[in-house]
Each structure stands twice: as structure tokens, then as C-alpha cells.
Length: 199
Image (cartoon, rainbow, N blue to C red; front, side):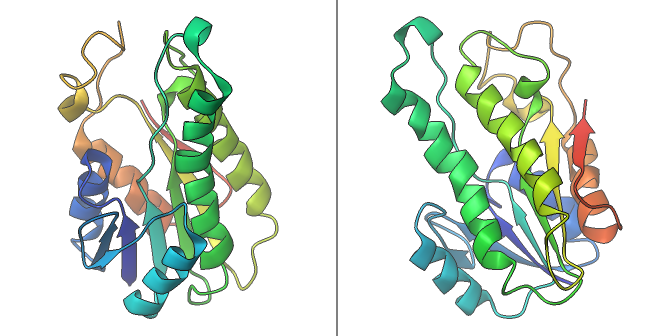
């Protein structure tokens, strides 16, 4: 299969690419690097990426940022950062990609642990993650041509512990290898409309 991974240079993207790259051709996409570049908040940029990438059997999104900060100081503009970037970026990719993927292809999005196990300063991320889960469950029953869609929801990755030092008290980190397997389950398997939890 030809698999496009958006956000392939990030921690989660590398985990997905390492596992999927064992059996499939990987096309890497990123905001400023990769085989193709893309801005998921720009629909024209997404269309251009698909045109450059050519025929695809699967697209995996591991890109997107949310806002971390105290709820008491959070503004609507702060909150919209995660909605516009991680949520709408992945939804934009889906809305456009459903028309361009090969028949029986798949779309895999990425959420995270916070909608089911919240932390302080993580309300925006929790909201975005929960919305992505709801989106794939609903989108799965409408996608045409045998297309499937799932979302991988990993816990804190071992490689990210230092980056988020102190933000995830008591959370047990998960390995990149296990996260990679979740993407293989989505891309290579038969499930659709599922939140694939890596805990």
C-alpha cells in the first residue's frame, strides 16, 4: 500500500512510520519538511498535497497542536487554537481525502489520552480528543467506496516524558512500538469507526 503520513517527523508520526514502513511505501508530509508539505488549516494546501502525493491507499494524521494552560486564564482565542489546528486540521484532511483515496482505503486520525484521563491545564486537548473520537464514529457510517476511518488515542509516549515533565502525574508512559502497532491495526485491519486506545 501507499500510505501518506502527515506529521511523520513528530514523535507519534515516527512511531507510525516505523511500523507501517516495514510493509508499505510511506510518503511523509509535514508543515515544513517531508516528501510533500502541507498546512492542514488550509484546504488548498491539503488538495495540493494529495495531488503531489498521487494515488494513495491510506492517510494517517499525526499532526496538530492544542493549547495547554490554566482554565481560569484561558480565553476563547486560546481555546480556538486547538479547535482550529488539531481538530479542524484532521477533519479538513478527512473531508478532502475521502474523495481522493483509492477504493477500500483508510483514514487514521490521532487524539490522545486526555479525554478519558484529564490533567490540569489540559481542558482544550481533552475537548479536541473527545471530538475526534465522536467524529470518526459518525463519519464511519457515511464514508463511500468501502473507506474506513479510525482514531488512535495513545497515552503519553516514553519519548515525550521529559517534554511534558510534571504535566502527567501518575501516567504510565507507552512505548513507540506499541503506538506504531495501533496504526498498523487501523491501516491494515478491517475495523472502522473505532477509537484505538494505547494505554
